[in-house]
Image 1 (cartoon, rainbow, N blue to C red):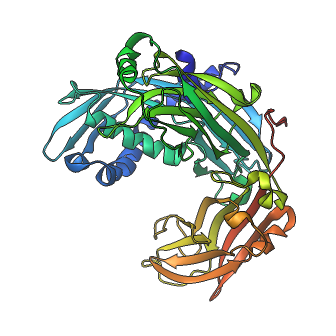
Image 2: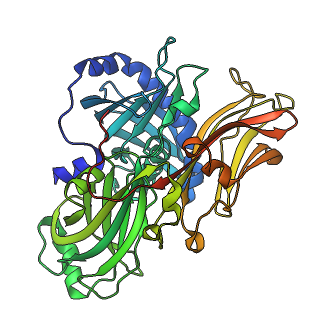
Length: 491
């Protein structure tokens, strides 16, 4: 089932080889080795303490050497973005002979001798300027969650699929997805004066996915899946489905008890940032002793629309072995448009459905009062009772103007029809400056002001008092007419 693996991580063939990129990576690999090692130590070690259970939380890296085998780039495609940026999409594959060591309290030292990483990488170069270096910023992201395999040595070499393997990989993949997988992009400024408002690439639209039904569980399966399906033939399973688009938050259906052919017909909306994002459906049998995975089906946003929005997909096991099971789903796509008419449209009313999107960009703040050594500024954005977001907290450091810091962060807020209605009397947006945990000042932005702004986008230096301002942008988008055709995104 190589096709399933490919859809999980990458786009199909058709790009350029671009061997010169592999030559560049080969030359830079020693530098990449050092940089990645430092990043892993700085980011992953603290996350182990927070996310790993029990004694595993003491695990930390004592050595990180990625070896001499560089990653390989293939299938490179170049396109222009909506705001005249440049987008590079490429497959990356790394099968590295690494030398990585981890140690922890009350845990024998373990090592990783091989790392396999595969995924589709998107590099966004924007905005394009007339001043050297000609590119304001670089943003890196995986289109879909990448696949990662670790081969352990030492105490863990007989337990590659034990708690250590699952936990370590889970934390690493969680960090990758939260920082480097769409809708998340890792930003590197190439021009210190770069305008974040011209850098951010907004989402494309919404994919409305209805998980209809699944069947074929009681039939004879193939290969290594026989054992699981033999279990399912002894008693009708209690089935539920999980659906996910890219790294967006997954949706879980209700559980249908005692059915070999469960029917859900449940709908959920997912934000789409790239047409090659993966649509993954996983079917589980609920059990008090631990849920069993029945099978997984995979398509992409692009493929699902190209097939007219009605799909019957084969279920495969986690090891990508074929089964006799199938799942059916239907999809509909809605472009985001600068039109608020859909906020109250009846077609977007109901559980799991969105009627629009609010996006807040926080570029920076100016005129913050206080001593450099003690200031810890951040910006908190609130809309209603359910939407509260906060930027990373800044601290005084070389190269940082702590009294005029840049934040360059974005926050998305789904617009749904609370009580069946969204109007200009909706809650205002609150943009507040914090110093540590203390609110210094804030600005209230009425929903109607954003809705009535040109292109439904309000950009401003919001005055929060005492001469301090926060540069932020608030954009509203409604949903265009739905359909199952691929949108025309030719440039």
